[in-house]
Structure formats: structure tokens, C-alpha cells
Image (spheres, rainbow, N blue to C red):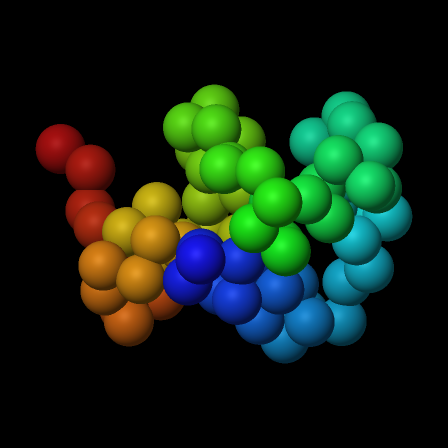
Length: 74
């Protein structure tokens, strides 16, 4: 799965641990780890939370774009 690499990449770029992100998402570290490793698909609601937390578009997390800046909202 490609998404796992982007989740790990953006987390490590910001010097964050899996434990810190799991806390932000109100879940266990092992639960979050399963998204990074591709054991489980990342649910849409988790992608939305991560996109908001990292201030990136969901498309970036899904490798649909390499643009890290969120789109302007109308």
C-alpha cells in the first residue's frame, strides 16, 4: 500500500512518534501502526483527522498529489 509510506513519511518529517499520533486520533499505537504498515485500510474519518492535523489535503496522504498545501476553501 502506498498510503502507509506517506503517513510514515509525514509523521517522521515532523519528528512525531506513532504514540503521539495515536493519542491525537484517540486510539492505540498498535491501531495507528496498522495504518502505516498497510495491515488495515485507513478509514476516511481518520484520513480527515490526519489531513487536518498535518494541514495537508487528503489527496496528499493518498498520493494523488505531491502538493502539501491544502486547497483554498470557498
